[in-house]
Image (cartoon, rainbow, N blue to C red):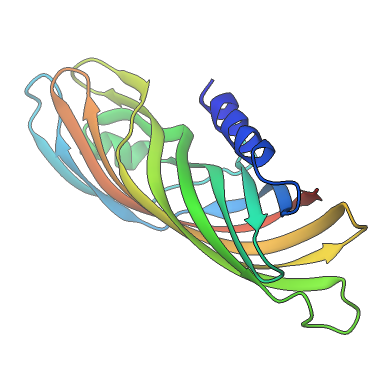
Length: 220
């Protein structure tokens, strides 16, 4: 449901853009990882506090897979604005989750990042005109699906707005035609997450992700 709403918002916003503008809709997947970060908070049902270092796993192609969608309104040949939704995800290894007081802890449907972006591209960087390098950055919010199963206390299984997020992107596109292009890119996201757990618990963690994306753009 959340992913459908985000996609609908991107398509609706794109439809409202004046016809004279160049609009790109990009769809991608890739390989996404997340380095270690600390989780802190209180366990539900009076289970006490916890503070643990988690070696997050990304499992990019395991269901639900990692993917993203980006809409960009190019106001000129080089400057664009847009919105982007990325379905990142992180799993805590079982042994580390249990040491912190959880049977299972993951943000896998997903650690969703929604941002408003500014993009810069260089369409004349190569004589062929087909290869176009670009960079971008965005600010927004994290909307993870919190899946927490504490050893003692009730489970949490719901979407939450947990804090601010940012993304940085650098890549290159290759024009197949006037309408379609392929692209590859590196993307970094950072999110600050303050989640509430059923039964009075809390979960606080800052998560970084690194991804190598590949996808296709539709231009109109």
